[in-house]
Length: 314
Image (cartoon, rainbow, N blue to C red; front, side, top):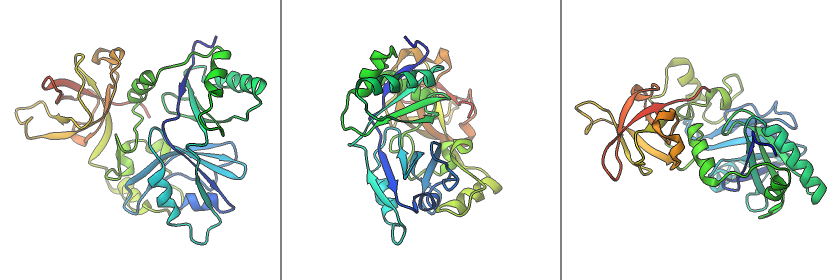
């Protein structure tokens, strides 16, 4: 049994496939990372942005022979696909929503690579089903995304069990996702957020690539200043959890007047209590309150509760 790795179902979240001779250059024009140099078998993280540098999609782009796969965490690709379709005029590009025609999982942990290999080998022996894989940093470095082109298939979890890889619960994945400060578009970030507010610049933004939609704003922020808000985690005192949308306030006498942000995703796992130093909620907060360790107050059903700001090394 591979104890230092965990298999999680990753069916939540969308998958787009781009085909056609112009797929690399086309996508390169609409996202923040360098797609033109992405070789077969490689994966990169990127934001798809509008002309003002706001986030329309947060994707992991996986290059395969003849195709580019775009994977999201937790969010649909309906709006993202429609956005890209608007610009397919003369380009040789076909965009397909492959969400319902694929099954997907992610293997996390120090031995994720070895565990993923065992799962793929086991599945190949038992069913002969082809499995695609990509390296992603969702919960930790070296996570492995696996997917098969089969709708609602049980092949991946069955192969994980046969390979001796422990199966994690959706609740455990959610807690670890939040602790890793991995946002979901539509819950934690939206088209109101600039790409740099998500604070994943090193992973998801190339500041040396050529022109793309939204580049002017993103480059100006990089060269001349900073964003006024940024994605952070919240480590919350006690067991009471806020609801999504709850107000985050400063701890001073003016706490009723100074709103610092609103809560996004919330985990219910008690193992991630404040004493562990891990986030149990995500929020985009004002920069002046974004330093790790900053004490804030969060509204809950039971009343205001103390919390502190959490970040991670990106």
